[in-house]
Image (cartoon, rainbow over all chains, first blue to last red):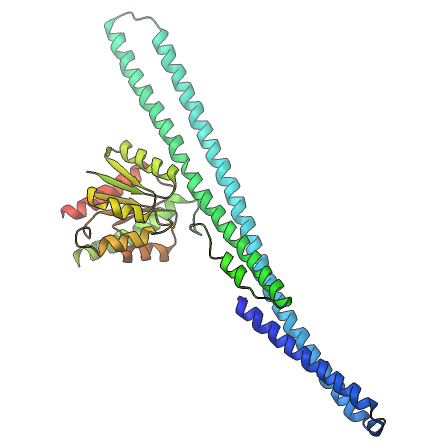
Length: 230
Length: 122
C-alpha cells in the first residue's frame, strides 16, 4: 500500500468517525428536548442503526488497510530473511572454497619442497624434475587464482545486503508514515529517507551462475547477429 | 589493447583486472564509476563495466558511449550481477556488446572479449 493510499484510507476513516460523532451529538441534543422524548424512538433507532453501519464501515476499512499493511510488511520481512539466509550460505560456500583451494596450494608447495630436497642422479632426472616443478607451480597459480575468483562473493553479498537494507528502510518508512499520519503529521521525512539507498541488483546471487550466463548468452548472441548486421 | 575496467567495488575491479591479466591482457586502467569512466574513455580501446554504480550507472555509461561519434564503436562488455531477462534486454538496448554474469571465470570473460572483437573485425 502506498503512502498516499494510507493517507486516503485514514482520511476517509477519520471523516466517517467524525460523522458518527456528529450523529451521536445530534442524538444527545435531541434527547434533551422534551418534545422529542418518547415520541421519536423510531427516529433514534434509525439514527443508531445508521451510526452502527458507519462504525462497521470504518472498522471494515481499518481492517482492510491493516491487512494490506501487514501483508506487504510481512512479505518484506520474509524476503529480507531469505536474502540474509542466501548471504550466510554464499559466505560459507566461498569460505569453504577458499579454504579448500589454499589447502591444495599448501600441499602443492610441500610437493615443491620435496622435489627440491631430493638428490639428482642424472641430467635426465634433473630435466624431469624441472618439468614437474613447472607443472606444480602452474597448479599453484590455478589454485590461487580460483581463490581470487571466489572473492566475487563479496560484491554479490554486498548487493544482497543492500537489498535487505532497502527493504528494512521501506518497512521503517511505512511505519513512520503510519505513525506520522495517526499523529496528524506528514510522512515527507520518511519518504525522503527512502531515497538515499545503496546501489544493488535484486537478482544478485552466487547461485546457478552457469544457467544465468546461458540465459544471457541465449538472449544476447541469439539477437546479436541480427543487431550487428542491421 | 588497453582496457578500462569500471566498477564501484574495489575488490571486483581487482578481480576483473587480474582475470584480464590471466587471459593475456595486461594493459588496464580503472574507474570507480561511470562518471570517472567517461573522463578516461579517450585513452582506452575496450570497456568492461559493472551496471550498478553511483553517479553514472553502467547502462547510462553505455548510452553515453554509444551517443558520441568518437566512442560509439567502442567494444563494451557489461559484467554484472543482474541476470533477469528484462535487465539483459535493457543492456542490449543500451548498446552493450556482450554480457557477463557475476560470478564469472576468466575463461568466460576471454570468450566474450574474443567474440566481441570478432564482430568488430567482421
